[in-house]
Image (cartoon, rainbow, N blue to C red; front, side):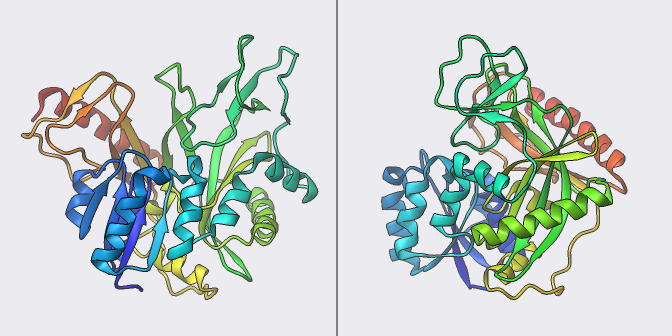
Length: 361
């Protein structure tokens, strides 16, 4: 385990927590610098975005001050692949290379690769469909479901169209080394569709989803082929839809995804193992069902300096912060004996948090 790492992501809290839980100090660069991250990290640096112009000076300062050479990246670089290319020149990236990350993001190549490997995917086209069937318009690049919407007659956009699939939205977290792929767990995910402009915005995810054994076997097989084709390393996730006993692959997230925080405090060690091609069973994984959900602002919220946050609330904004409508306020994590109890606890926590935010206490 490195003594200290640089973590860079749109929101770095989860990765910072994973590092600290594994005994590693952290310097964080992200767009929020929330109170959790500030408390855990040696230093927390807030940037306007992960664009190269916004992070270049900060990264150079961190390197000079702390002498760091290794980094882990999270979500948010999908929109700024040039940033990862730049970082790779002077830093050792623990995870997928910039080239691998970009190849996975190339939608035309990715779906052609699925076809060549005989892996099922939804029907999609790269020119505007003329029929009246329900299509989704998806951006070429994005994360967290932003920019995805149902097709309408006035659509003029730079993206592609995917046939809408009604079914369960699932993902699988896995670790990939040079020689093998280890499935960590299947997860059920959902959207927060309160805002018409972002009807497929990522809402939350629950671990240990029940998935038929036959589907698990098929997914494991296709992950083996995809990991080899893209030379994936470390923790990754694959999103897919399950409909009428068939799975349809949507995308690969070639970096540590939100579900990683639901499988125990030592999972970063699994990421390091995989990146060093030493996967084994020495890392203990949590078998306790749990869920993570983002809480979005229903209206503009000013965070009171008197607010006492519950222990299960994370990504906490700093006192006095103003959160605009539709922006994330914080996140909540719930556990339970089974999936039903987890969701019940999650809903209870949402009600408690809504009351706390309303009263400011």
